[in-house]
Length: 295
Image (cartoon, rainbow, N blue to C red; front, side):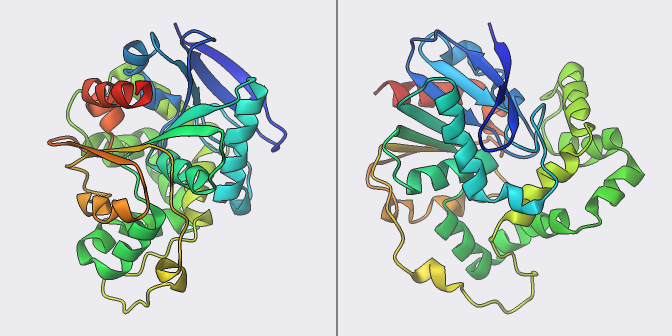
């Protein structure tokens, strides 16, 4: 059974948080990505809640959580602060961390800070920042695939969506890109309801606007940012990266060279699975997570 709580954090936001599993089980915090919410994990809860205490927040700007208006409120350091403040609010000391998409970006960032409270890290279709930025400069296919980030950063994007209507936008840009039947009518209405809350669409888009990642235009000459080739902190905790290999937004080349940034790395490849692996393939993802988090 999943429980929901509204939890006010000292970081200035109140998060809507889904909780499942025994309170004395090993805690796992799961961070969703764009354009989702705690719903990312809906089919995995029954597969993992018998072994773990699952903490599944709607991150700031998403779902039923607060959506601050300023772009600066979506910088990675602010969201990472939410993560640890949430653990504190729930009385959680050490925990294991799982992230998908933008949630994976935050999970990478939190692990890079080497906070000893994070015991294990699992990433699902979310690139390491150095590899991602390098690929956006050097790899034509990844640069082309990531042009949607520039569209989301356009200050007029909300007006474009408003003109179309959120239900039509959902069907055209989200549901049209996934296998038929992957989202039920009930889930569709749930997502549309979340996206329609005042300020939420802007909050979701502000994650892209706040990111320092550079996405050059397809034919532009672009220099490699200096930080990409500078020394970068290595992750020392056990890390599992699960990748849906049919992801057309974040290409599998994001796996190349990961061992240079992670000491203890396991990679699980899921052939025939797209970007939204947690609900396109909940069984294989939960199996991989369960084995890794229980080790």
